[in-house]
Length: 152
Image (tube, rainbow, N blue to C red; front, side, top):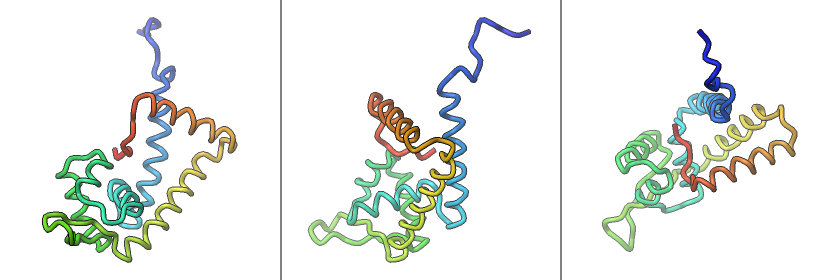
């Protein structure tokens, strides 16, 4: 028996945001898999691309994951020879995270995939509409103080 006194799923903005987000993210995740990288590894690589000599703590803070989860990401990237850990000349206890040459080369290629994924998915919107959507989503994120990259 239908319940006319409650809203249906499609009336909720969150429903539409999740539907779109899942589709965009799933498409990108599948493309990353073809390059042997997960979404969390991509985020770490992209952050480290702009943060040479970051520490484990730096990456943990920027990714919003536990130290253990970030350690696993780092270990996988080291296994794939995309990241190295090197001692800090000023602090014997600290290790600096650096992309290897292979990691440095991979990041721009994966960034191009991300750009192409967005372009393909949002092609139904004009450039002005895309800017407006980005602005609205940015406004919502800022109002909720959401700063960490989405990893799930």
